Amino acid sequence: MSDVTELDPEDKKIITLARSARARNGVAEGAAVRDENGRTYVAGTVALESLRLSALQTAVAMAVASGARGLEAAAVVSEAAQPADADLAAVRDLGGAGTPVLLAGPDGVLRVAAQAR
Image (cartoon, rainbow, N blue to C red; front, side, top):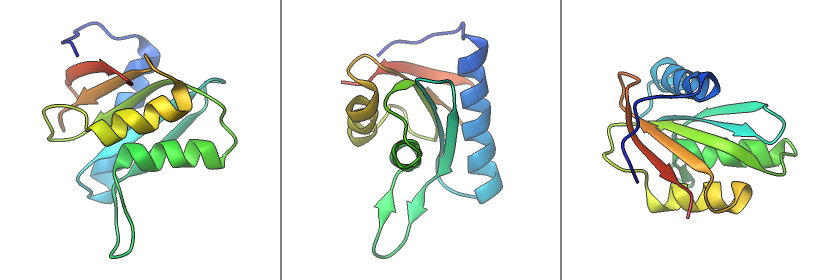
C-alpha cells in the first residue's frame, strides 16, 4: 500500500460517489466501484441483524448482480486507516489481483492507494 496524491478524474469520481453515499445514508462507510465497461456501482454499509456487509462488499455485490464481469477500480470512504482484508478480497474476486482500491477519509482526501490481493 502506498500514499498517492495524483488521481485520475475517473478515480476522483468514484471517491466522490463513495463520499456522497456515506453522507446521504448516514452510514460508517461509502463505496463505489467501476466495472470493466466504466459503469459505477455505489453503496453504503449494510448493518442488519442477519446481514453485515461493508460498503465495498456491497458495491461489489451490486456490480456482480448487475452482470459485471470485472472491475477497473474501487473506492471506499471511511474512518479506517487501511482497507479491510475482506474488502480487498471482494475486489480481487471480481477484479483480479492488482485492482486499485482507493481509501479516502470522510473529507474525501485520499489516504491509501492499495491493490486487491
